Image 1 (cartoon, rainbow, N blue to C red):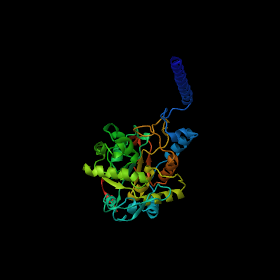
Image 2 (image 1 turned 90 degrees about the vertical axis):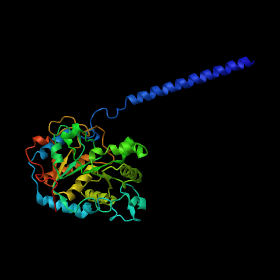
Image 3 (image 1 turned 180 degrees about the vertical axis):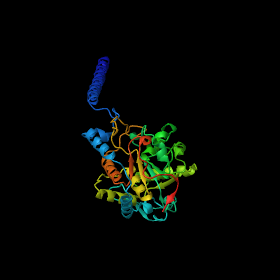
Length: 372
């Protein structure tokens, strides 16, 4: 009797096991079938903005036509627009958090939090701020603002970029020697996205030394951090600052002032840019228009086709990761940059810099000269 019961139990367990295995197999097959009909992410080397662009060829051809018109600097337009930005956004005074403009015990309201959440300036936090504004009271004669667009590949713009008095770069881009002919190497200010700290350096809980070593190509440039965009950023950016100080890196960490970011958003929203956040590159262009007497832009191109011969481009000059479309409206921002270009306020560079017949926005015969 006991033997029969054991046999019955064994049979039931076997049936149960086989049934579970069969169910798992069926589930796997069904899900594999569903997955096979989904478009693989990043299968094609085309940025998101271009994939969603209707009639891209016609749009790009229209842009190329407008861009091909002879460029001429318009001093009156530039002075008027630069003064307007200064009066609305106050970048020269408040773009950077300092001990003078953000006193101990004050409240800093995050620029990206929906409910205007704030953080109190404690002694530890206050100690990470520079005492005075790190940007001078005088304007630089010439500035290069370098985006990371794939249009920089084979552009031969490196020497022209580096010839500016002040060079701004975005999101800690690679500056390897093989890229120098296209993107240059000089850097005076570079921004950083905290996602780099998370993905590449384990949120700086570990890998502090590798992080600091990765900054060597930027020399003693200012490292502009979005410390007060979101609460999550604050701790990450503070860890970056501590690591830089602990390992005696020459790079100079500073923090974007959220009040300035809000002022920028309000102004550009009034001009038709209604996305939740401006891109870092666009903010850097806006700041440069306050700080510099002439501004040249490189690597700003939101489409995956070149405007000259329509060949495919990667999203960045160093990789093909798509932009965060939920935040940034790259084509809309570019339209404003093109408008400023046509008004002679700044100059966009969209082709081979060595082949350009016209000189840059302003001749740079006297390097590192600063004008009032």
